[in-house]
Amino acid sequence: MLLRKPAVANQFYDGDPRRLRSELSQLIPTTVHAKPAIAAISPHAGYIYSGHVAGAVFSRVRIPECVVLMGPNHTGYGSYAEIMTEGIWQMPLGDVEVDSELAMQILRRSSVLQQGYQAHLYEHSLEVQIPFLQYLQPALKIVPICLGPLDLNSCLEIGAAVASAVDAFGQPVLLVASTDMSHYIPAETAKELDTLAIKRILALDPAGLYNTVKDNGISMCGYIPTTITMEAANQLGAREAELIKYANSGDINGDYSRVVGYAGLVIR
Image (cartoon, rainbow, N blue to C red; front, side, top):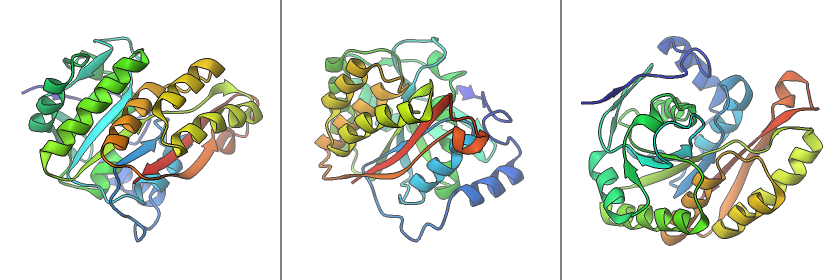
């Protein structure tokens, strides 16, 4: 059994279980408004910067036992569309098992996805989502998908594969797209560009998001997983997307001249 150890504990989030649990309790407001959702879009910076946005998103979602996690490949390791189909992610709050059944169902339906684990070994974009999900769903299982540069047709194909597999799975599944928005530009410019992308998400328009990011040079690192997640959500009957929170790094460190944008959305 492949054991995947934490790559960014004590960097992006506290590696001590007790302190991490305390931090999550502060980042996640009341869950009284939590309802089932098809998908969530959540940022993946260090918790000090974007944890309040992620916490706001997940506080609104009833987390099922199975979550398909899709995020960008920042490291360059592995393939451009890599799905882990077995293994254990060892996390500070406890081990999280890869849901092999659902992972294999997705893999079988896609000609683009490749089975593997190397893209996942040092990647933070999926890992930072897991403590939030675990905190709210102790019986969590995941299907991790790490994504590099892909053309639009490949994104739509993977989205269709995910939707078909989830539909056949017969149990509640949440899709999570991990992404930050604009990187290292003035806050006003970031908000303008990020708003263009967010509008396409709110319109449930995956091709529109993909092309808007490309055409406007938006440095949204997870637009590929977000495009795929939206396509899958649409095929699973999505009717609306809601922007839960938008913020940027300047809100924390006071430097609005070079910010990273963070958006949290829920699709139902």
